[in-house]
Amino acid sequence: MKSLESQSTKSLTAERIEERHFPEICRLHSDREVMRTLSADGEVLSEAQTREGLERQCAHWERHGFGLWVFREMGSGEFVGRGGMQFSDIEGEPEPVVGLAYAVLSEYWGRGYATEMASLCLAVASEDLGRDRVSSWTLPSNRASQRVMEKVGFEYRREFTFAGLEHWYYEIGIGE
Image (cartoon, rainbow, N blue to C red; front, side):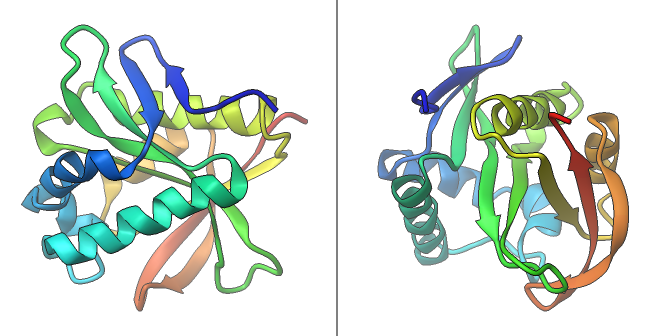
């Protein structure tokens, strides 16, 4: 399998998430608008919580050869968010699913960056990982995320509980 550590879209560059990205991920996790729908309690994350999550994301890359990327604007190099795919255990699924995840700093909302991240992930899942299915989920109140998923072809499947909260589960068949 080719290295997936660096990627790009029409507007963004992406690099494998690493410990050195801690300050940028802290910035994302302290953005109140982002965390309203990203954290389990709707609150910003502490540095300790962010470090713990970052360590898990780095370990996922080591174990599986893919994971989350840090995304930057192509022209400016400014950090805009993170996105990618990870294995996740989901209630009602017989085995871990490849789950799409993305988060964009609120100052960059409305520019199509989450859609670019999602589209890139689906291409990598199909072409590089040989996956035929990708899942994603969000809170019922997160219409922006639902629109991104629907725009790139995900279909709503069901409700389920994740991190102690009701979520909507979406799925897409790819590479068929």
